[in-house]
Image (cartoon, rainbow, N blue to C red; front, side, top):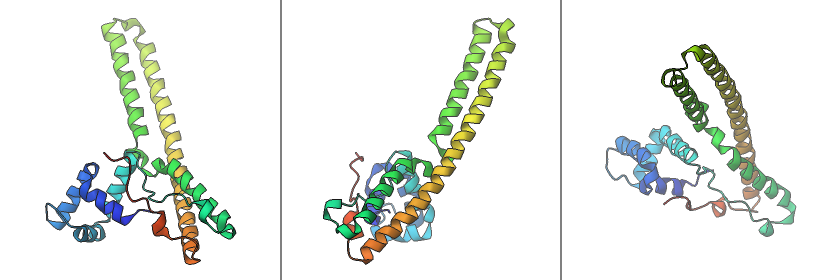
Length: 201
């Protein structure tokens, strides 16, 4: 559901995507690739598109470049379908963060950061506060925190898997509904495209 024109424009001109642009530059062998060259690079290296999409999700930007259908302007006979599309789009925007691999998610970074803090605290209590006689209790607490972190990470990983599968299913369903309404002449997909993000500086 990407707006191809917008995506190419952002890669070429928005600083957030400089790392993606560098990959394009390597593929085309030019400092300032054209849109046509970018298009060729995207065909040669699908990873470029994946990197663009991952950058969006990491920065809480959506890869769904479609706005909701204006229900006031659609035929009453397809209003239910249009409502379903809008509902799916909203749900997909909410769970889009789960399309990242869990291993690359901020959730895992947070878990590791907390564990590092706990480890630092353990050392602080034992060494700096001279609590050597309590060290086994402190280490036991640290061990429990590792178990808790592992359990929480597994729980979150499952959540990522479930929501990722849900996102993919909704994506396919929504695309089919949009294609159906477009074929029947009720909407034009290009009219739904969001031309630019208001999140970029």
